[in-house]
Length: 255
Image (tube, rainbow, N blue to C red; front, side):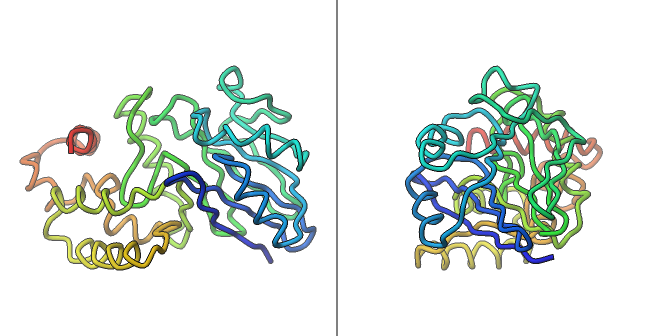
């Protein structure tokens, strides 16, 4: 199924995404940190915005919305359970709901942890999942509202997606995430290689997101609490996966 997926840097380290259905030309933007770069991308491509998909209520994912809608009226989709904290929604969704964008279909996941009622949008036909501040490149979002158990549950949902899924996360945090990951998974050759690639990419000003889920499964410590090497480093050989995840998140908070 034809589609276009465009990554748009916003603010100092945010990303928004444009997803275009190739059959109908309908276009969605996922999160709106800042309107100007999104408007510029739409104008450069001659695209008409159809929908806005919001992942969570934090200002750096929604503050550009009024300015964007002023020039590009579009249907706004967001979490029903968080509607009171989001901008006005045209469509309120919950886990298990589907959002249609032309011939494309997005499945909604509740990925609470970073915030309560944070959602992700998985588009199977595009092999892409828009995870914002839940699963991130070599990391996961800080737990501002949810519990470690909630976030680990969210990670497990995303881990179950096909390995070829493109993970479209919300920030350019990968370099710092890599430095932390090496402290808990120092013997991981795939992580060491990825860290070197990230350093080279950032030195050239290239983004490190989106990333493949297969790569995250190999290198992201927040998806690897069952790994014997990580457990040995942490001294948690007999702990549960949830307990190991909790310890990794705790260490990242003070890194």
